[in-house]
Length: 284
Image (cartoon, rainbow, N blue to C red):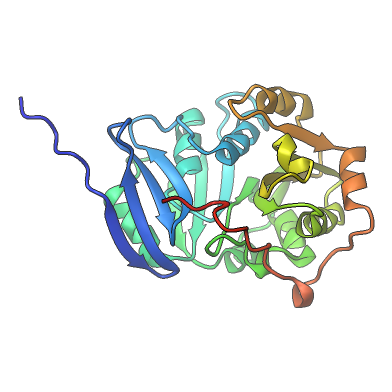
C-alpha cells in the first residue's frame, strides 16, 4: 500500500497578516497555525483532546469543570483561530451548541479548507467582530463565553473595557462563566485593569497562570475567570497544578490584592494589551 504523502506547509495572506499552517512531523494530522509568526492554534484532527498550548489546556479545565461531565453547554467563543477548543468541547460534551466568532474571513476560509470540522458537530462559525457579536448576542443565551481574541499578539481595545464586561454579563446565564486568555507582565497594569473591569459586574473572580508569570519574572498568558456564582476553584487548582506546565489559581483576597487601586476602564479610555517582548510568542 502506498504511504500517504507528507503534509505540505500552507502559507496564505489573510485579513490580519500572513497565516501559515505548519504540519507536526510527530503527529500525522496535526497542524500549528501561526499569523505573522505568532502561534495562534494547534489542532490534531485525529485527536481533538490533545491540547498542545498550556493556556488552551487551562481554558479546557474550565470547560471541563463548570458542569457535570458530558453535560452539553451553550458556548460563545470570541476568537476562532483553528477552532481547537470548539473541537475539544464537541468531543467531550456532545450535543453542545457552540457559536464561534472570528473577524478574519480569510482565516476562517483557510481553516475550513485545510482543517475541516466534523459533520454535525454543533459548531457554527460567524465572520464578525467579536465585540459587535457580543453586543448582538441574545440575553442569557450562553453557559460559557470564551474570549481568546488577539490582533497579532495583542488583545484589541474594544474587548478590554468595563462596557465589554457588562455586555458579557448580559449574555451569560445566571450561573454562567466568562473565561478570557490575556497576556501581561509585572507590574500587571493591563491585567489589574481587566480584573477591575470584571469585579464591577461579577462577584467571583479567579486567574490561572504559571508561578513565574505571577511573580513577575516573565511576560506570559493568564486566564481570567468571572462568574456570578462560585467558581470550581478546588477542582481547577488540582488540574492546573497537575499539568505538564504547572499553574496556580489565584482567587479571593489574592485577586483583590492584585487589583489594589486599579479602576475600571470605559470604552473611551480602553487600550489594547501590552506589546509582548521580542520572541515572547513567536516561532521560527
